[in-house]
Image 1 (cartoon, protein in one colour):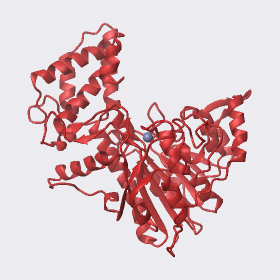
Image 2 (cartoon, helix red, strand yellow):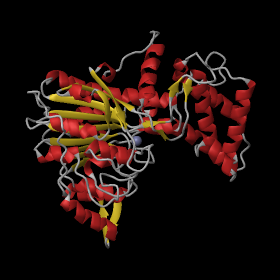
Image 3 (cartoon, protein in one colour):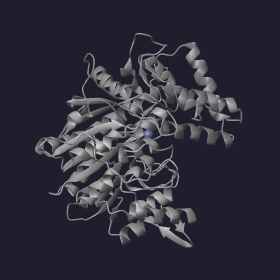
Image 4 (cartoon, protein in one colour):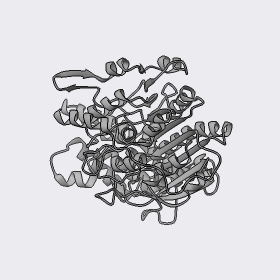
Length: 477
Ligand SMILES: [Zn+2]
């Protein structure tokens, strides 16, 4: 905890970093309203997959455009970290937030993890704009954290949460806190209590959310339903009762709209999680969910085109996703992904249920599992996704590995640390749909940038992730 206090004290002496870009803005218009959307893990293939899927299920040829893929300015952005070519969310997020390259795991701190780096959100606040930070994973996760926190390690969730409740930002929305309680010295701190003490209205119900308006003051709005990681549910698992990323974006606009302007960052954090699990169906739904949030910002842009800037990008690519693979060669059958009814997370629960029954000496009902698989993935259904004998063998092996995990280290290697049966079903469906995956991790390819509004053209061409906040600052008032 000593270290935490040290960094807390350091943060009082935040290094003033100049984010002024070499390119001085020559435009008369200045961006008073800035939106930065970050699709975590959203490479070109993730975007293309969503567009190809929407076209396929609508019976159209080629791509069905998303809102942001129609934006006039597009660029390619490099993402490498200070000490590793293939970056992580913390280092890349720090670049996007501060304009500085740093090392893996740093939350807006220098490569040594000693000096805090000022963020574009903090700069916006300093010049009188209101600031909102939204994510559908936990709000103390690396990507949202880099905008308001300064910590040497992304895993310091309590310290990051403490930075959040101490911040002077106006709105936090989406996921909850991974570590809502902790100690500073001998003192036990409850982050929600601390937040209220510091003037935040904290809500985590639908009614509380609905009641928030522009008279509510500063607010923290947490999704009423969270998963075990403090994240909002996967879009594929949502019901009409759940709040979406778009709902939080609409609310942020309502709360923060004022003459002095605003800076709003929205992260689509579950694109990354779906891609780590090589789950194409979930990935596509998460990209579409991010697009719906962007649609809300686009509506605001249309009402204030001379004062608004919307930037959409990613922190890195995840999974080495591709449209095309060695199973189906030139056939893309991406519409098959529609047969997947829920996320890998949800199916893991079904598998865990089976395993639990087994330890209670219940007999193993493989036929029942095959029926569930036919219903939840379409796999083995003769009119949906027929399976070969080889496929059936793979499923059976994975099923029994899931039921009797053992401690063979090669199991972990084969299934990437995921539930063997779930990841096998996901991979089978993706293979047949023509989706390729090279990794359970991030990759080092450049990611796309899309922009519309004041100064949008400056995001065109090949840029680096450190350019993003510099360009934004150069076009802000
Ligand atoms: Zn990431």
